[in-house]
Length: 79
Figure 1 (cartoon, rainbow, N blue to C red):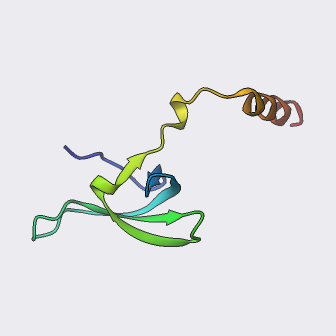
Figure 2 (figure 1 turned 90 degrees about the vertical axis):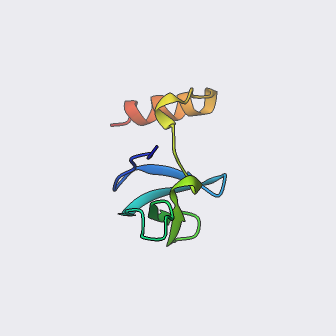
C-alpha cells in the first residue's frame, strides 16, 4: 500500500533526519517501489529515498513538553 506522500510533506528519513518531499517518482519498470527526492535539513541537500525508507512526520500528534509549551505561548503572545 502506498503512503501517498506529496510535495511539501514533512518526513523522517534515516531514523532521525527531518526532510521535506520535493519530488515524487512512480514505481519503475523493474518493480522497485516509488521513490522520493527529499530535502534533508541537516545535510542541506536533496537525496533520493525509496518509499519504505520514508516515514511521515507525525508532528500533529505530538504532545508538547514544558519547554515547547513555553516557546509556543511566547511565540503567540509576541505576534
